[in-house]
Length: 436
Image (tube, rainbow, N blue to C red; front, side, top):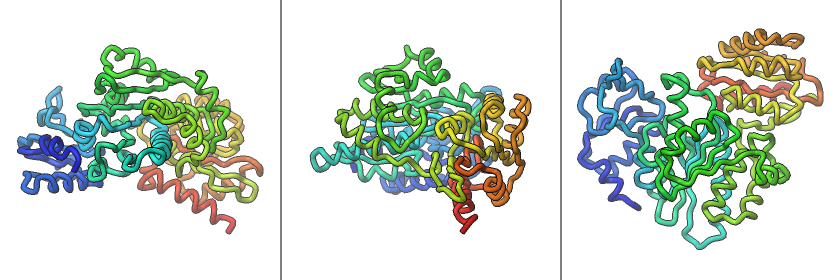
């Protein structure tokens, strides 16, 4: 195993608690037991159980992403255990392989950008000497520890990172991209600032000679970078849609539409070029890239209505970007699980956009509807419903032929579905089978 000694040294002699036993927790257990068969490991699931176990003097607590840091807080500024003992699979991985890693984060667009950049680097690797390899992992669903056996000195790792994976890292990726910052995951953090600072670790924990790319069009992000610029050791490079590169990319043939996707392309382009990829390889890959499931995904045209599945839209900014990109939206399905996100801007957007039909789903849909009415939105056909079978039937009946029906909820899915993927799949199945 490449760099096995470095990895083992981080774990050896530790009394280890694995907090959370989902996909990543199981992956952590496999790696630790493979390296140290006699390691002292305890595995605990459930926030309450983890809180009880955290006080028992562990040298290392390897936290899964789904476990909020506040689980380890005792209150009044005190902790149940030393925060220095809390680590994660991402933290340990980057301490050993960070110099070979390209990391992508942001509130929205990270999966698309990660997959696009991976595709670019794979195509470039095919033109190089045999043995060059590019691996994909991280928040995409592939635990970082699972790819370690495939890594050698010629490997580049492309990884998507969530805020939960980044919040306590000691080493950031050699090449890092921060796409944007919007309100999200407020149920895991004490404040929006705490969420933003978790994301910012991808820049703040870089070393001299590293590269950090960020979108200066995003006001929240640009302000935060400016505030912490003096703490960043890497090369800091902003990009904007109004740049020469942004203008060039707008004219490039692509199956991705919308300014937000042009911005994602810019990030992938800059990171790839910093790694020495030929410009033509970048452009060719962008032109061939088809995008990802549940991300402004074309479902098809049925009874004259074109349906799009944008179930991954869990915040207002993503929903508004999808509407702006598709332009011909006549019916919009919004709402789901309520996480306390501010919907005032979305309400104003809905009140002044030309969409004729609005569907409001779940508790979040109720709050979006309230924001729409507060903004004096009137004259629309509206439906308050939680049953997607009835929703799809209503959409067929009310959407003008030649126009678009868009599922872009601006809310999480956990009130009715396992995740946004299940919500998107159910929507697609109902649409495609309605007239069959």
